[in-house]
Structure formats: structure tokens, C-alpha cells
Amino acid sequence: MNDALRAALNATGHTTETLAERVGVDPKTTMRWLVEDRIPHARHRFAAAETLGKDVSDIWPDTYRRKIPVWFRPWQEIEREAVALRSYESVVLPGLLQTETYARAVLTHGGLIPRGEVERHLATRMARQGILTQDNPPRFTAVLDEAILRRPVGGRRTMHEQLRALVAVAEHPHIRIHVVPSTVGAYAGLNGPFVLATSEDHRTAAYLDNQVRGQVVSEPDDIAAILAAWENVRGEALSHWQSVDLITEVAETWT
Image (cartoon, rainbow, N blue to C red):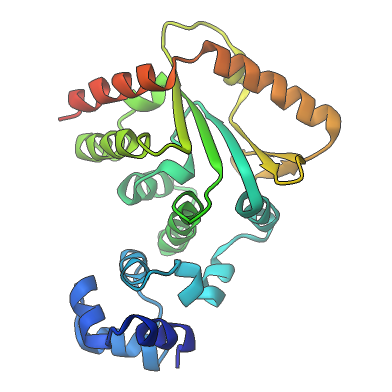
């Protein structure tokens, strides 16, 4: 028995039948989730959690933890506790801003993740996005290279939907998006992506990604260097609303 799912159903007045209707599956399927503790497909997990007013990790916590690589867990805890996140990306959108179809394309087309593992990685990525929609979300600032907006990840329809979703999320007051235009020449961002997280007690840590695994850094000299890089990329970027206008314009080229 999935006790967390049972409690969520009781708290909201839903039954396995009404949940099935909202999620778009057969009632026998939701009964299996409850009685046999079956793990739903990623999109069904998110739809069920949203219907029940819960995070995915609240209803399927053990599975969620198993999906997270050991090397990523320290950063996940830092990310969850942060009051401010500053992200720079030059190749793909930050995971916290990716749509499910865009994220699946990123995870699939590189060929580095076995097909059987793609959905597990996807579930982890999408569940992380809950930190931006929780009651007290961190301030999130993303700086993106314009090339990201024009790279056909997943095809034209995926890109159009992704950029429209980016415009929509930019309406939230705690989220700011800045684009470094293609007219900018060499700048610090060409050295690679990074994320800076600031905790409530003003401690700062950074996350650096590569082809194999990510690395959390917190040494003062390293943080100082990454902060300097952040000031450079932020200084080269357009304002938030100028960036939104550019994203909206590029989105239309994908129709």
C-alpha cells in the first residue's frame, strides 16, 4: 500500500476513480498505484501530484531518491535550501526551466544515457522544478546565450513550445531571464555553464557540470572566480524584458 498516496487521496476527497479521470488513465491503473505501489509514468506522476496538491517526491519519495545519482545529491540539498539561484547556460536551457519534451530530447539525443534510463532521469529533472513553484520559492536568475534559443533541440514544435513556456515563466516575479545576444564576442560564459546558490545564512556554493558528472564547489577562491564570471555574463546580457521580447520573437521563427 502506498500510504502517502492514500493520505493525499483522503485529504483531497479524491478516489482512485476521480484521480484516474483527472490524470487520463484507467481506474485499475490508479488502484495499482495505491495497492501495489506501482510507479506511474513520469507525466502521470506529475499530473497526479498536481491534482492532489503535492510534490512528486511527497507521494513517491523512495523512488525519487533512487533516481538521483549519488554525486548529484549534495547539490540537490543545496538547491532545495537556497534563497537565491543564479544560473548561466550556453548550450541548453537550465534544467529548472525545461519543458518535459525539451528535457526528453536533451536526455535522449546525446546517446549517453541508456534508453531504459531516460525516463528515470527525466522524472528527477522535472520533479526538481517544484522548487520554483513552492510557497516560498528562491529568487531564480538565468542568463542564457542566444544560441540556445536557436538550436533545434527536439524539432520545431518542441522549440516553439519550450520558448513559449519560457516567456510564460518569465512573468513570475521571482524569476528573471537574461539573454546574451549573438552580437557579443568572447565573454566569460564561453568557459562553461555554472550555477550559484545562496543560502539563508548567506553561504554560497556553486555547481559545475561536465560530460560525466557535476561538481559542487565551495572554496572561497573558486566561488570568487565564479562570481566574477557571473558579473561578466550578466553584464553582457540584455535586460529581463528585452530578453523576453527576443525569446518571443525567436519562438515565432519555430512555428
